[in-house]
Image (cartoon, rainbow, N blue to C red; front, side, top):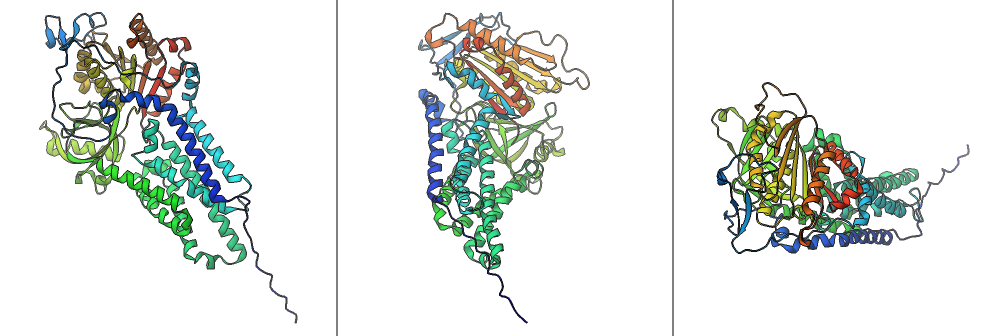
Length: 600
């Protein structure tokens, strides 16, 4: 009986005409060069913030300071009722009853204004701001396309995924410092760009998926080779190889549990897998391939710096919480913190109470600061009921132990921040400001407007037209904030402010206001949805009329549109801004948008 020899095992070798380590290094330098170019283009706006120490020194660390009343500038009322006059001003009487009085007779000191782009490019900027998808602008799409095109070139230059999986391992590792830098709350890249971590998070997601795809091409390529050769079990038993498999599993887990469904349904699971996966993947990579140490150590440095900064920016203190049923929100007052943030910024809060559930104390959630710096009540947050955690906070605030007593419940909280905000943009450097808020998005508008009014009283604001547009579901939502809104109108003695509240549903129960209550044009309540285009045109007309024939230092410097609310609201306002006639846009000095959207 004849026996034939067994066929020799298949041996696959991978070859590349280019050094993958050197290639990814130079591509990273190219990406850094593009980023540096964008930073240089934004440098004038960053430099403009240096005009006043408080503009660039605040917005980093929360603190407590003794309140002092500034006597350098005050308001003199000419009406007989004096400062106790409670009627809301009208457009006709707003300017006639007051005048600015300075003890030293000094002229106002206006902040310098730097436009986001030259006049010739304003049309292109509006096209870039147009929405490609809900919450995603054309500019963001172009940035992503440029990044992906660069990586595609890197992936296919003198190689292909079937013959050179080594290249794709280097691609994955080379992008790790970027994905860590863009994920950190203390985002150094975002700071140079003048954007908060939430604004550049889309790049974090894109880069994370690029890493996962490249890592799987790299790992599956070797697994396929070893299975063809029949040596998979022998090869995977080598420490450097099984650590590579561990890194691949971590990468897949990270991207799987970061999808929208997991973040919405099981945020704690998303967060825990991210922390464990990100902490384990780095030592796994460096054990798998020691030459990757520069990339891994850079990511470790970024992560450690972020953790240290978050520890420095965290305050553990006592807060008072009370429910506001009309708004469906929990009002959080933190009197021990009254400084350190800029208008429009937010903090991440953790409630250290057993009333939040078994693991509720471990969750942190972001909320926009609704108060101005150095206010008597300290920091104020408005936490809308939108999920399990916020519902528990609301129930804790109205717990039976405190019902009917009129007292706020005291809880220990951990406050981390501040983060986000307008970045290098100074709202007070514009000639007009329109704020469009939806529901609890009013917190962003309130803090921004209070800041503008305060700066105007001090002679540090160019804004001469302010219009607040607030959309709510029920008119009763206006009740708890009516005193504050009325106060804003009374305080805006030099710059007229108009507040338009719209309700989108029929009132539940009795209408909360008499027919004659809203007799002033300064504060109105109307059914339906706001006509943003008409509101923008009115603000432009007033700014242009007030800016005609003024001094050079008071020339028209543009319209800022602030939006805070659901993604749909921000998209619709952006679309209306894009429809503004180019001639009207140039007459007002350009229109810029700053949005703070609800979501991830």
